Image (cartoon, helix red, strand yellow):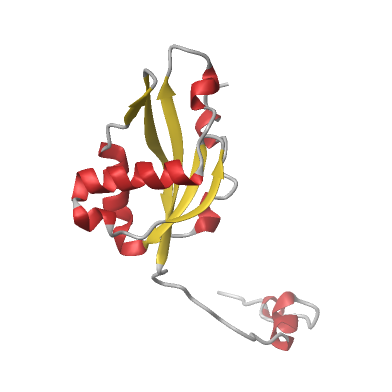
Length: 148
């Protein structure tokens, strides 16, 4: 013998289901393939001297280092990849590259041996890459999470 409770199927008018019928969706936008991707790079210097050897990184150095890495790895084709420098902050920089070129760009930066200036080797390290800049924002310090 089975009994059903009919009160379980009734929903009072004050539930969220009843109030959700009043709202209207105004706009929906889905970005499936963004046109650009983003990279976060860091300058690493193996200096036997004080840290002032790694103190400076500016737009021209970022452009020069990236161009040298792309030219060495991909030749003239690599130097044709457009790079937008979004921000340079001491030893870190954020770049925007076309989405199809992100993989070759990251590979070129990773394979680049760097430059030697005044007895110090300076190398760019890829910290993060993403198709969405919002995914990279606020991630500063994540690499230090487990090393306290």
